Length: 432
Image (tube, rainbow, N blue to C red; front, top):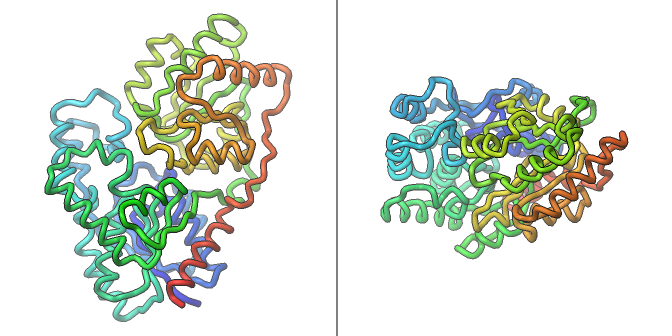
């Protein structure tokens, strides 16, 4: 059996969606003739913890951990945030309006921690892994980014050893939506671009999650790029029990940032509540995960806080249970110019629980295409009030009639088992 060194900052006990891509690939590579050797961070500052993810790790898996220092504790002290505050997603969500301390912190992070806040982990990791590989050879390297400190570690290992390297991108590097939010000096911007170009030069194969982002990467010089989308693991859904509710649930899962604020949808909920007291009694807007203060203020200003439930972060098993017990699953896409290529990992979880999806954002993007091809719901622009209202009302009538919103779509192509076989094929090609 061939061996592949997988470099991934995100690894159990990490919770959230970001850990799942590498975790599921590592789980199923064994069945494809590849033994994964995991290198990850020790005592990392993860956005959430979920012990349930350990179930996907085979007992014989070799897991290497390198100590990491991250600036989050200093950031929290400087901005006077609570010790346990989740600050991993400060570009998307905030519990309070940003002040000068936050802006200065972002500038420091942008220009002194390149490519990201885990930059201090790169040099010691390269040294540790070179020593490890000297005594424990592998056949290939697989890196997953972001964080692109993973990608940077793999770049240095490739340059030093010549090992075949597959560079996987969950999100792009300089083309990702929040890149424009970094307060970069010209020098820092050039450093990002130079490091990204080194990936294109040295990687034997590159994978990314969507067709649009594949084309975007190729437009700035990437070669040997293939698409491996996010997927779903059938094992996670075989015995899943729905969190049943008497409410008519419109549910969103994950980060709900200011750039995904669905004001028109909130207005639809408000107007339906005003028009029909029964709707107001029945409806629940369920928001699971981090929610930006601007979204909460929007909800308050429209007077729908009484029908809104904020759960904060929950473990994945609870989130999936909520999903399966929902009437409409909200897929809210970023409003930035490059959102066409964004396919949130939760889309495939939505597909797996087979509940109707309402996708808001660009109607010709990759996410919209998947929703349309699988006939799993509706895709609308954020501004389409009348269509939105009609869809919500139609589902509400089904709910009142006691009819299911079950969606019977063919989604086997997005199984983690199938997608990991594709990854294994790329690894086999670069090591042939």
